[in-house]
Image (tube, rainbow, N blue to C red):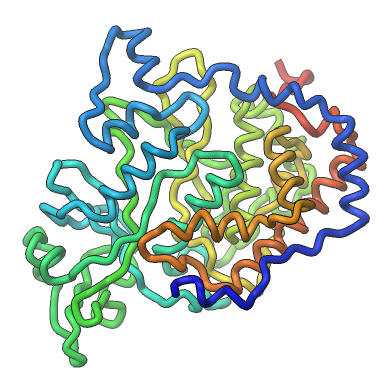
Length: 418
């Protein structure tokens, strides 16, 4: 029944024969053995602490199992661990509900009966809602389903760097109001339509006009697991070199007007001149282009695996999947300007582009197990396939201009910058 909305609609892609021919030629030139160098050793947190600190990591519940298996190359690998975590995030009784401080929009902290925590983003709009074209990216509404869909897209792309997020339907009265802290409880009210509502506290849209209301008590949302406490597992907060201006007056950043920005600035920055970070940035922007996320100002990385290069955690994707009619090509500028890509990313994208089983069919199947499926309106699927085609055209141009050896690599190294 849940899948009726897509039964009569095809999962299709229309790859360009010209691009396919170019890719076929260049893929033969790629040294695929380089893929082994992308992550020569993926140590889990449990293994790393056991070796370096003689410290044993508890796995007494699904949270601790997930934390123990955070890797030096990706956030998770074991799908069974994630499945168990999702079951708990979507079903465990909620003990306490608090306002998440510092947020621009409504976010709540759930404390479950096992004293573990997660972030809850309530649903504001139905699946067919599209962002107002007149809204700036920094004032757009966040979408709970965007967090869920991005987790699954990140997984099928082979990145596994997004934070586990699952859907859940909560009872606003028994699970939120009755468990809410005092300052949150004060914001609850019953609407003229006799629905239970709340406002919470945040920077934007926390007022009666933008109240979160049930039907009459039930409300859908996304639940995202808390990352480990930073005191135990430190993280770095990195400013992106491709950050937008976040200004209404000066709307274009340097990288949006200077097409030599990557060569002149980014590749000479010591943080990006050597190692995996530039390739991480390209991966992140490929994903952001697919999901239409313009709001990527910072990214986080774990600062715990000494001797292992840190990777970008794909966090904060709530403003993705806002429009299906608009492809923001600026999001793809890191790929177009830097013209570098991992062999594994190229391989995955190429397979989705040319194979019978499309990107969107694979994504749809991955999301189908979520409790609030369907996650995306069907109209997002053609948009995703269209954007994949744009990515492949950009890659073909990079390969034409530079050759496979200069574009496809497991680690970036700028010989002009030591």
